[in-house]
Image 1: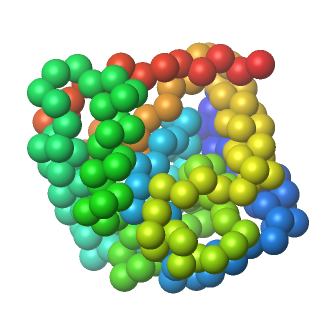
Image 2: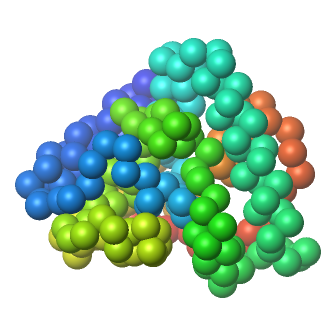
Length: 196
């Protein structure tokens, strides 16, 4: 399938999710980035849209900052996880460490998402309906249930785009090759997702 067709389908899923999310009461505001201090899993096909957005829309200085942020994030990940093939439990434990130490998503610059228009489904559907102050205490706070249902439905739709088993990848790792970032990474045993 042509990459432009795939990207068009991804954007269609995003638009549908954004419309559904806009119907849910939310206290999330621009500049509130508490939830951006956790690991962001993406469906592997989402990397296409993010990389194309970075290349087409972001200035060179912003791209360089993102590149440095990704290198710093991966370095932090490598130094705060066991020296072996990692499993999902290791990633969950890392999330706790990253949240406590307030390790931001590499795309967060000056408390704003640099890829907001192309942000992955995990970010699009992570909204809360009460007290954003609670998020400052717990950046791993779960989104409202309705948003979680939209996320799961969207993941299923994204997985159907390529008609193959789909892997979840942590956002920085998913983009290393496409952004030509050369850094040693640890292997993570990830689960494949088969669309329903």
